[in-house]
Image 1 (cartoon, rainbow, N blue to C red):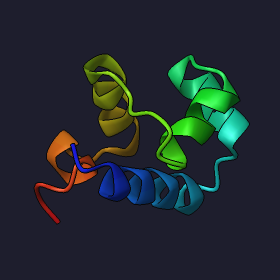
Image 2: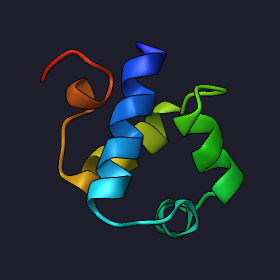
Image 3: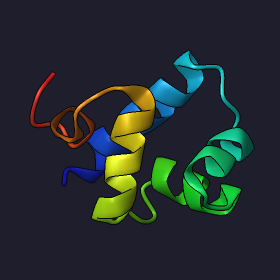
Image 4: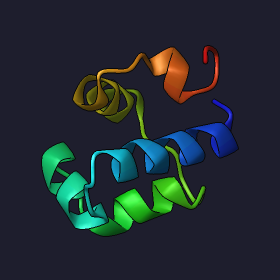
Amino acid sequence: MEMKIFCERLKELRVERKLSIVELGKLLGVNNSTISRWENGVMLPNIAYLYKIAKLFNVSADYLIGLEN
């Protein structure tokens, strides 16, 4: 997965929904440092969390990883 695209899209979706890093972490069942690492490109989510993120924001996993616009 293209890390830069994922990082940008995750943050963009979170901000559009007016969610803090802490709030998004609670919705996904991870701590806020994990969200921060995802948004800053330190690490990427596993497939289970990629699925949860896509469902939460009603976008496709392909969109999140840059395979579609």
